[in-house]
Figure 1: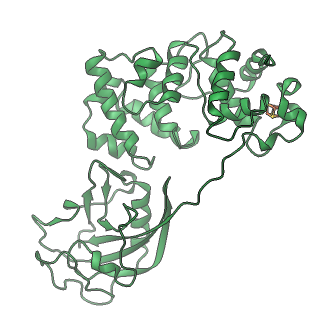
Figure 2: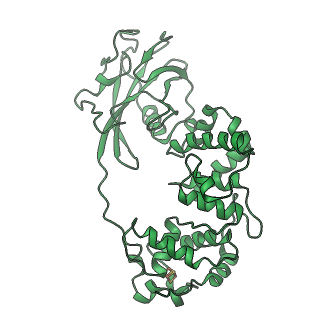
Figure 3: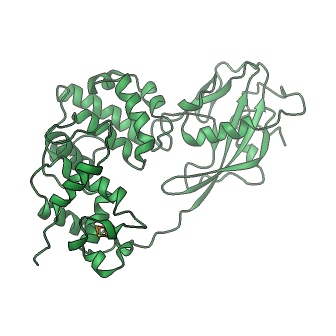
Length: 378
Ligand code: SF4
């Protein structure tokens, strides 16, 4: 089948007038440093540009090169990442920096295959780095580029099966020129003109050859497969405070949800079968204290489930908790810095801070090293 040639000239003309200036971007023939492209692309997974910009600037200020990042201690990397979510990305980021620094002399591989060998780099990110940092003509298909190609060529197989067709169309229609600009121009164009819900076909420079515009219903592309509804999970978080204004925080296990992040002790939500008895949520407390369950709940949406979290608060005076071990490991009293907490735990802290102080004395039955489940509150 003969495809309509993709109008790259019209796209570049639009990009030269309307493309965004971003801190990790260079314009052809200049190429952005691979470290910047890689860092921004990992941050942009599941996260919008406006959120990523201050994180990107903070990372390159703290760690100007990939080897600076490699030498950073992991706690400071995780703290700098806090709030961006999907924390496995930060762990892979740090590991990849160490591999690039140690095994590749601080230089990222310049081929898709070489890039794919690094942790946390999949086909899209490998293609993006190869194109934007090394000027290769690798296939780069994110959700934005997918939308433009699905519409321009009316590719109707549902997502994600249509990715193969779109990848083929992208490779076949790559203009060869300005290879680092081509995917970035497509992304900006998709964001500004060929938007998901209201594509501006009337003023679109690609409209003359666009099959979706000719059909009159561009919004129906790309065709989405039916999504399964997200399952619900319930959990409970425990905020213990002392009279210095500190809270008891644990470092979560490296593997799993919010891995390696600072958090309040919590229970019941990290696996599908981790049920907390809704009638007795305080039975899951990490240690005995005068826990007060707050009347409000918070919600948080993960990629594969929706969480409803209750929050229990205990104001504990000045307890001796040295050496206390809980199911989540050791913890410590720390001044809470919300910016160092993952978003879920920031919500927990906000809800706990809004809690009225308990009305009775708070140093009830503590310490009690034998008791893991200490329901002593309401
Ligand atoms: S004509 Fe409409 S659907 Fe086609 S590329 Fe332009 S904005 Fe997108």
